[in-house]
Length: 493
Image (tube, one colour):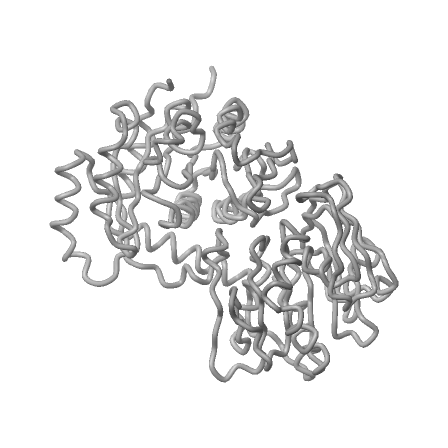
């Protein structure tokens, strides 16, 4: 007898950054700990913060949700990932693999990907007890509805009921929920079965009249008012807009990070931000890099040549070179590594118009971008201490030069990355290396000039916060009602 499709529920938001990703992560951990085979799913994501899986790349948020569900991430969890490439459009990652470029003017073409989205969803569903689906942006963007695959377009095609979440912290939550109801057509409106309020500060009881106003105007029941979860800031951020400094008075080390327009894979910074004696400063446009930094980190970039030009426009290249002359340390990660070399070439226009640019010249290496993309998880070791760790690579470039003879890491017995003769400048294609406590501790010791053991169990901390998030949602949401909604599918249209 054929197995019935697993129940599924979609978490929609009244806008971007209302907490959908974390609610899905918390629900995944909650239901996994109740013994269910739960799977996260996001039909379409737009982010340069990607994760490598054994079978390709997906959005970093879906990798965190998979971790919350206590399973390995898979491309089917995020079948369409659009990676912005400046103002010209996005690279298309379809079921984990590069599938071309989507120009901004052709954005409606996203609808062409619906068959692959449904294919991935059904594969996940076939091996699950429950699928928690995350929407993108807002279903109220009616100008995009005709070709929508990210919100109610998917929900209707797959017959998945939805819950709409509003963020009270940003203000206007009543209007955003009632307004979404007002602009949807009747068939889309019928897919939304309930609403919830997120990020409430203060006495939840004071919002009772607000809940009643929304309920009367929409006819939707309220599944809960979720108070602000402070520790969410300790989890990897999904969006570049969520990047925050980890400022601490009295910290022994100061690390500064210039935030470039195409910043990518910025979760590399999370373990450094959580270190108790590290003051991590994210420096935005119009600000000089502080002169008292111990370390400058150039993070990953989706558009290396554009970001290199932006770095020069901000005058940050002058700040970095001055920092180097003062004896400061510099680390470049992926695109940041490429910028530290003598030249970056993009002869085929892989990341934009074909061309090349001079790098900062702090490493004796040269980079050429090519169409063959490296996406993989890997084991590695620190070249100085031999301490092992796990990391991943997502990059297009090939980097060569004399400073690769002093690689900071080793992967499968070969050198990886490059270092200056005095070891104060280094670059690597490895992402996630600093999530290893021993590796991170060894690097911070070298930068501080003294032995220091990290007091942070980073991986344990992420799981601790996910457990806390699950308990928080269990307290403030009607979980039984959520399951009842998931188990009452709507015929697909």
